[in-house]
Length: 168
Image (cartoon, rainbow, N blue to C red; front, side, top):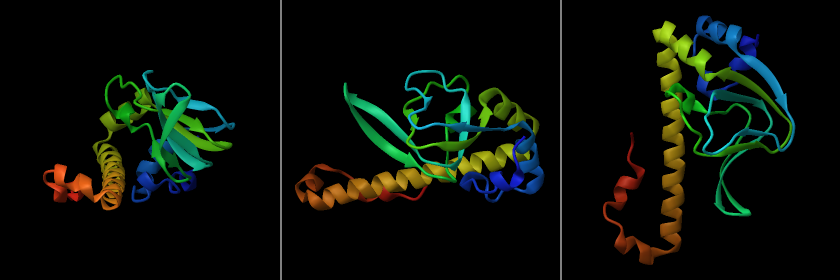
C-alpha cells in the first residue's frame, strides 16, 4: 500500500480527490530502483504505469547503434507509461533510471480495472494524462520554433507555421 501523501506529490494526481487517491493507494506498489535500471524497453509490451517520487528517469530512443536521443528527463512528481490505459500497448521508448529512484507503480491490468469500475477516477486519470500530453506537445513546438529562429531559411518551406503552437 502507498500513502495518499505520496500520491499527492505526483503532478498528474494533484487535483484528484482523496477518496479516489485512497483507491489508487490500496492497489499501487512502492518500489526502489537503482541507477541504470531499465524500466521500459522500446518495442516490448508496456504493462506498468510509473509515478516518480524521487530520482530521475531518462526517456530515450536509439538513433543509431551506440547513439541514443534523450527525449525527456522525467523528474520527481512526474509520471510515465500512460499508454497502459490502451489495450496491449508496446513501448515507443526506453526508460532508464539515471539515479536511484523511488517509484509508485500500478500494473496495466489494475489501472484499467480501477478505471473501468470508477468513472470519476477514469475521468481524473484521462484529464491528467491529456494535460501531460499537451504540456509535452507545447514544449516540442517551442523547440521547433527555436530551431526555426536559428535557421530562418527553413521557415519558407513550412506551411501553416502558426499552427505549431495551437492550443488543444
